[in-house]
Amino acid sequence: MTGKTLTLRLKVWRQDGPRAAGRFEEYDLPGISVDMSFLEMLDVLNERLNADGHEPVAFEHDCREGICGSCSLMINGMAHGPQKGTATCQLHMRHYRDGDEIVIEPWRSSAFPIIKDLVVDRAPFDAIIQAGGYISAPAGSAPDANSVPIPKEASDSAMDAAQCIGCGACVAACPNGAANLFTSAKLAHLNLLPQGQAERYSRTVAMVDTMEDHFGSCTNHGECEAACPKEISIDFIALMNRDYVKAQLFNRRLAGQRR
Image (cartoon, rainbow, N blue to C red; front, side, top):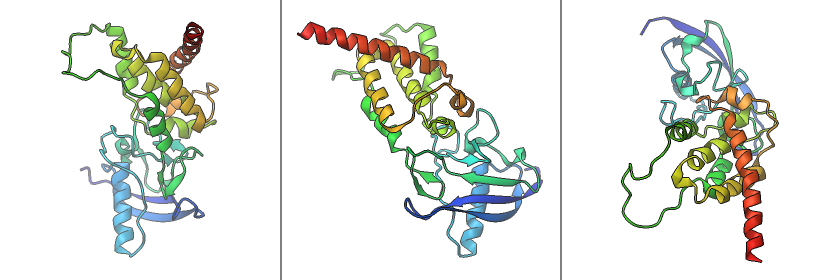
């Protein structure tokens, strides 16, 4: 610990429930160590609210290691805050100065309705995964890990896509509220591998169609890539679009063969 502390002024979005009217509440917060993470700072706020007999601020968190994606906050209008390639839980107070005002909001997207305060419902992401974010396998013992040769370029790209933590920053940052970066990342980490080829086209159609039921359309603003805490490339969106077109042609051929 360095011993240096900050006094901050927080403007926090408070909303009692999905149908309640929301409002900003302001809190003066002295004695915040620069070594704290952003979520630890919110913990201090809630401890003080509890001690004063007030309702603590509801916010999501779990691993606090930048893995789970639940620490989803808009901080001064930026998804996960000002530090590029960083989840909220990895953002530290040393990036702020004494006397700073920090505005904290939930994700702003019609696809992610607010549950309470800073907590939103990201069930539409679950619906996309349920539509095809898996690989079917026949029953039996697991094959040896090295039994299926995988080109290194394919495995590297698949691993890059698999870094997606499903936080929703891409949706929150997109002017259209699109989920193309999330969906394309979840598709790519399966579609690029040999094990995912059997269901590649059916998976692509199912997941993209489900995405379009809930989210806006992508118009290549690129805000999703800029806001992503794992810096996932929008190149995956191009790959998804290509596979979707191929899937439609593939399905048309199948329909013709069945006649």
